[in-house]
Amino acid sequence: MEFIKENQFVSAFIASVLTVAVGLMMFVVLEPSVGHAVDDVFVVEQIIIGEISFLATSTDVTLADINGLTGGVSNGSYEVVVTTNDADGYAMTLSFEDAVAMQRDTGGGVIANYSPVGIPDISFDPDTEVFGQFAFTVSADNISDLVQRFRNDGVVCNDAGGGDAIASCWDAPSSGIIPIVNTSSATSASGATTTIHFRIDVPNNPVPAIPTGTYHATATLTATVN
Image (cartoon, rainbow, N blue to C red; front, top):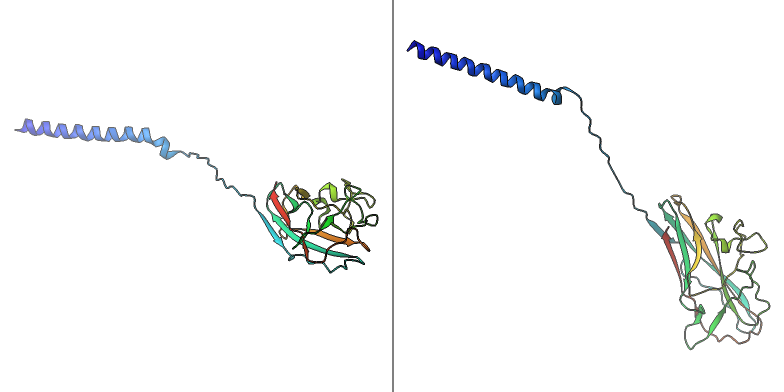
């Protein structure tokens, strides 16, 4: 009986020793991962999408009345503020709905598009023509925003290093896409202002005569990020 008890004691002792030994071995194996510093490098990524806003600070343009026989000149303008966070800036274009932009509302009749001699004309000069004409030009708070076509050196337009003299570089309306602004960086928080100027000149006793009535030119400005 004592022999059996001694065997049970020995077996229990051996089991305890084995348990401790296994525990020590596991600690030795696991210890490097719990006892030393480890690094885990990761990146947080955020994409900011380029956006553009378009704020027209003017309503539809209403020009002053012009007498059909004795003639006259009428001016108007349309102003827009563009804001973008796009690092490459934005481009803006202008187009008119009709090939001859200024159309009479009812019964037919048009006011002819301006016919610039230059590219475009530094000044609005329809004196050599005997018919009424409709023209436009563009100015910007930031001269560098204007496409080359609307910059001038005070003598001619389409000057890459030119400025933006008031009421200069008059051009013909077109139903095609007319680039007017192109920038290469984001705008300030207050945006960039562009103004489209319009002018109609009717000479004394125009030929052909311009029928009485209301005339409209429908124009579209489009701004897109570069």
